[in-house]
Image (tube, rainbow, N blue to C red; front, side, top):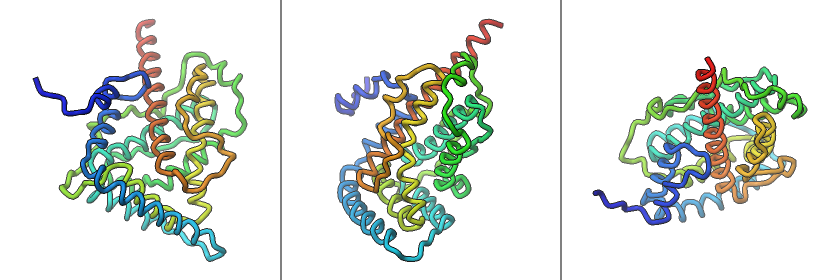
Length: 283
């Protein structure tokens, strides 16, 4: 019998399924936590990048001409992902595109909204077109198209939900070419990326991007009304979108946004499977 080298706490969370989150996502995160470079490089690099981020944030908000470079930004991120970011972190990034696209599509389809999101990159090079900037823009456009929230209208739809744009996540669909140089864990990678984002977006674009996380609570409220589950708001760490924040504590807020989308995706995927099984049983 192979000895489990994980600490008792990590073993405990690997077995805990109290929160709806797919086992594949949990295992990727645990492997990321076990990245030895995480505990050596991350504290130093996160400290350095946090200082650099606030310097860039201050400079970008001065009354100077604004500039952005979306294409160069995405090419740079893809280069880092391909050569420096760990395979586990890359897979978590690709999963995040899929989880949020599914959530927004479910919300739109079950709210009589015509907007659809089609950001489902399967490999790093796909992110040259399915970009992080598009990711944010699709979120905002979805809420613009949704308009006023009408819970009674949504609840009246009953138990048959629309899943026409839903794409279940299959880890075998993702393609990552592993390299020996891919050593950066998820949090360290994000610390690097957020500096690039701040520098290569306009001040308003970056402000909107880092405040978009706060729409998690709104998403949870709206989907909770659709599926008649008001507990979904408990998954949302980022709340109150009317309160605009800066880059302080951005790393944790981003991580909790990632956990939120994983939790909500798993919840909805279980609901989708149950609905189709019930339909087959009736037929």
